[in-house]
Image (cartoon, rainbow, N blue to C red; front, side, top):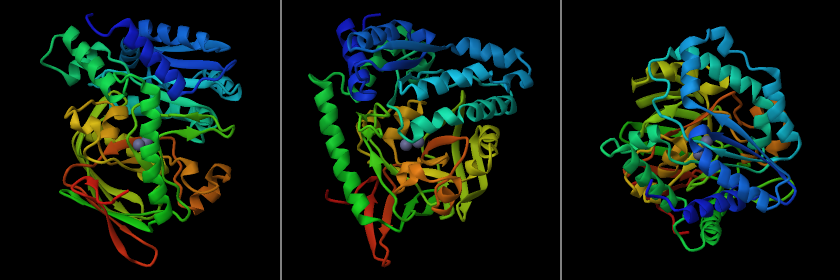
Length: 413
Ligand code: ZN
Ligand code: ZN
């Protein structure tokens, strides 16, 4: 491998620990990583100890073993999530560990595997993880997701390059997008977060009653809950530790009203959902619920996603990303939601972040529902932004204001 240098890798590891999870002295660190990323993961672990981590624990994933299991194990076995696994994750939540996910998978990993089998396993895993997910989705612990190149992923993005060249190219893209190629990436992120802060403050002050999206294949009205909060960039735990859940991140996002979505929306980028690609799909909503859908590719996978539970047919996130975001400008399709969602306005099917409404993290299920905040085992972002998307905001008194035109902000922040 010609690229990257040890120095750049260390810079990336440091950025993930400082700006990503903001690891504190004497804090435990749990890393979710992939066996193909072992060398980089070791660099992160070493840096973490140098920064004063109490302990570093790595949960390894292996794409090839995962596929083998889907090929050979019975669906009933795939639905089993051992109690000790659930307990392990809960333990790190209870301990107040920082959680860093180094997430890179082959977008076509589960191509050809029975979609019903995959859906059943996904659902069982989501159920087992629901308690642990409340730690991350309520920002009770510091968590962050980053990605690193692996061969199958790099080859999907750069199919005409050799494996080695595709990996080099992907490292280069990642370092540019995540600002590792800048002199002081940590400072660059502070500046970036300050910019996102201005946007979210503007939108929070406006308290739009609804947003209306119009683009080819899209005509969608989305109501916003009263007291909704736009978030973006860094987050804070209850103990006031600042961290960045996603690296990269270019979005500001809030919760749509669970029962206030009407019209239809078409995807603009392929969606990699659990090892299968869903592409060119349209969803039709009535009173917040998907009542019709079609997809050119992966329709069965989409069907299973929507059938996960009641909440997976409703929206849980609306995110605004200007079309000129650096990831969008790269012109690449990453087949990795962490990257693709930050190139495009998007929506998510499934669970909403409770703290996207005032007091949401202290509401029970019923109160969240009454406030229009969706709950589900799933949370899946899909991209629907483009250079042809117009968005209007409606104030409480009915006044209409342009929010985005041709995919760019129509607002002078
Ligand atoms: Zn998002
Ligand atoms: Zn999301």
